[in-house]
Amino acid sequence: MRLPCDLIQDLLPLYHDDVCSQTSRDRVEEHLRDCSACQKVLDTLGEDLLPQAEKAEEQELRPLAEWWQRQKKKNHLNAIVYTMFLVIILGVGYYFATWYVYLPISADRIEISHVYQLSDGRISFNSNVEGGCSSWWCEQDEDGTMYIIPKRRFPGTAVFNDPLWWNDRMNFYPAGYEKDSTSPLAGFEPDLPITAVYVGPVGKGILVWQEGDVVPQASEEWEALVTGTDYEQYYKAVSKD
Ligand SMILES: [Zn+2]
Image (cartoon, rainbow, N blue to C red; front, side, top):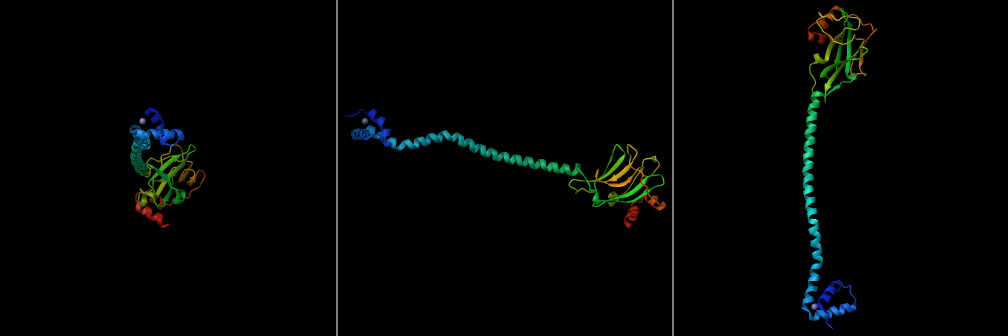
């Protein structure tokens, strides 16, 4: 009995994969001997089953793969852009820091000497900052304590190189003495009467004078040097001692 082609073709996948019964197998082989159409179907089954599945899978995955490639390129570009952005930010930050960020100079690099009282009541002293400084800052507490803070620019490269600037004479009117506007040296202009003077970082400075301290009177020669305009001569006198 010859089985119809469509029945055989239903069986062909099972036959091809060798998962049908021996009876079905025999019937399929018997049919194939006389039917080239079904033989052709079997042949294409052998060829195409696997590649077709792969092709379908590939087609499904292709958009994902392309997306992944695009994403990889994009990420690479983003990394470059972010790195450049970071470099620019750091560069600009560093540039501004060197101009606008001032760091207080630690007290162990500051030397205070020649503390004398002048005839008008002012107290003068010499402040020497080892290695120099970029600027002097001034702060006053509510109790009248004065902080004179030598600072250097971050990262410390832009330092004034003139020793007359950082090995300097300074003076102030302590509490109880009126500022003399005719004095050749203006001194500090505090908001409150000065009760103490420190040089260095706030809280870690060197005490120059505080209320109650008795300071030796300056000699006439020294007062002339301190109030005069000959900085070179003053600098020589301070360095000699
Ligand atoms: Zn057939």
